[in-house]
Length: 328
Image 1 (cartoon, rainbow, N blue to C red):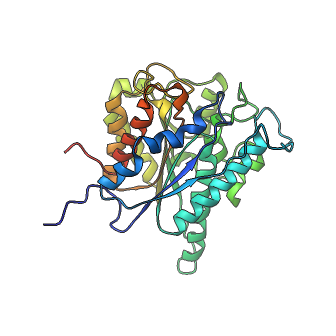
Image 2 (tube, rainbow, N blue to C red):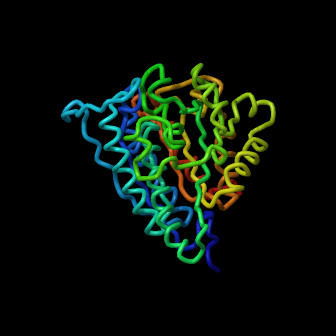
């Protein structure tokens, strides 16, 4: 008797892992070791146990900012380490684009959340090339990406609104076409996503100007208050419907700081009152059940701040849930 396939991917689709050991988009160092912590926690072994074929591309090379000669980039406002992050995100975009064009499932592990600028750019660049090919048969074809952003923060700041200048607080704004051209135009498509196809889940720590930016942007936002009042299942049903109803692909970007620090202490921007262990897993399990997930990213694991790699292990378990691991 053949063994039952435990994951929700197409039979012949491989998961291709890409590590991005970057921490200069964040306010404190250490998160650049996140990909190593996640691998050490048994990522490949966990996925292979689900019957998933895995290819690990290793890590994108991140030049040490202390040693690299930094060119200057003029930008209104404040964007820390912008030249380095532009180079890194452009490299991520190229890697992710190649993975998609091979027909594989991109799994990007970080690293601070600014890596999502490159991930989303690579996804959309690949889809646009596919769209051009399809237009030879169907002229009005447009392939669009839905985004579920699970995070304590909205990440809709720009250099003009950010109180810190840390670029890990800007990737959603960049994907929507807001911010420096050197970031928004990576991959050659700007904007990369439409506000109505973006859903923020788990918000609980927002800057004053960022609150208004979220309200003005047209994205859908579910805060921890919504999860407290309605329950995670109801919020995720709405989030999945909103992110997939008008789109062809679904990307989920999970910031580990969305989880309460008592469960996930190894991250640099801890805020109490986050998702419980089971709420986080339920979100990922519901995503898997749709069969709509086409790419996944997990960011902000900082092993320097962790306890016995507890957060790295949680990251591995959440990735497995998103790719089809179930309790029964």
